[in-house]
Length: 160
Image (cartoon, rainbow, N blue to C red):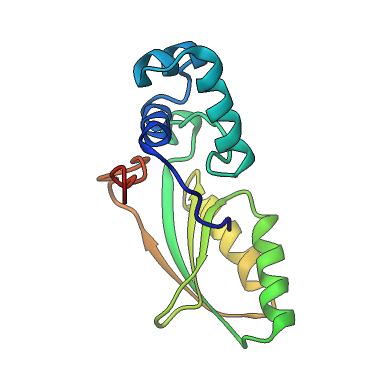
């Protein structure tokens, strides 16, 4: 995780524009934020170099590509030793179905977002998880309907 970076009003305008449409050209962004192309490009490169912008990727429709099931999974580990945690996190990195993973407070140790085609796919994934010696418990919450997804980050107002 990066350290907080100082952002001025123009930087925030650039970030808002890119969150709205990541395919905007530098010229389009420059026009939108009232800069010429060269200074705008310098700002974009700085935002990338400082890891404020960490990448550009399309948002895909999960159902359109055959991934119609989303499951939020709470995982409890057997113990919290360094080997167990490292082994579990390494295993997660090698599971394409896990698209988000966070350590959490509360009754679970991890909250995962898992995307699969169907129940058969999910059953295979659960069996893979159960084979990990450090996993004590898995609790599944099946998403019935997506209400909000892919929202832009709530960027601060300039000067805050």
